[in-house]
Length: 495
Image (cartoon, rainbow, N blue to C red):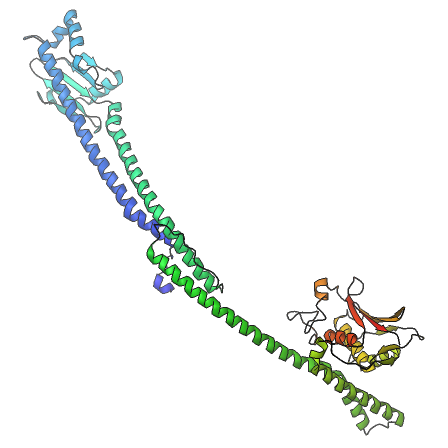
């Protein structure tokens, strides 16, 4: 794509329209205005020349009428009465003309003037050709200013010179003012065209932008985005048709996407349940299998002598773990019964101290955590299923070991409250947010999420614990504080 563009910047629609408008309208209009201005300037300049020449003829005619035969302009100037008549009658018809008119006698001395200006007169006299170089009886333009033509007329009989000068004000009014009018006219025309074209482009650009936004939204996965056009008389039919077809297509894609999303969710839940169930089986069965394997290996050793009491104790533990393994398998296969609170237990009188000791023995590993039990020797028996209760505390101990600060103890307290036994299992860890704490009894929920997971497990331990405790007629509550980040409080009936 870069090779195709040859390094040129990719322009937006509004930028392209602006360039086309500038090249197609502004530039031609500007060139046309420049040409019109030059033509107008030439025309006005010619008019100023012709009018100046015409005035020289008018003044010459007046002088021919005033000067008598065999009389010079100097003679008239010397005669006071005739000089007065000269000044009053010579420029009578030109009283409203702004040009500067000077009449020189045969000695090139100023004899009469109209709109006299000393500075201007001196400049004109410097530019005026000497009498011998003048063209007689023919109005002639001289000077360097094109826009301010100066005309002289050299008359021979009688001898005099008429000079007509165009002033700056006349030039500005005739040329510069017209130039401003032409420029303003061109600008007004350009602005009017810009307004009309811009009005159309406004609707076109907005609707095209809507198409772009909708396409970008679809590319990012937003299949609900519809094109919302600004429909007016200026909206092209093709864009309206394209928008309707696009919206229909997006609706179909969105329906298909929702169906696919639903199927994917079902597959994901099924796959997650299968994976979690496999992890749960390995997690829950590992402890009894390890105990059975350990004691069996011990009994099979030939390099040591094992007394009968130790053999009997090992076989008893193997039997108990086998029975526990059987119960664990049954528990996993009866998860729906736990959810429906249909799990059956055999409750008998149980010594809590013995259950805690056995649970501590069944704990797979402690990772340096000491379990400190605080229970009175005369603590009464409780009504529970011994095997299930051991499973409850093993799960609680394992969870406490997993999430405790290093080298901190696991605290177990047993208390009485009227006819109820209350057992607390506490460990020191980070305080658990209330919204997280309320979900820990759900299936496959862990304290650490998938991104920060540092311990093994499936999140079924507390789910099974809750099911077992409630099946035995008790209840379990979780809490968290600054001192103990995790506190499990179990309430059971006293036997």
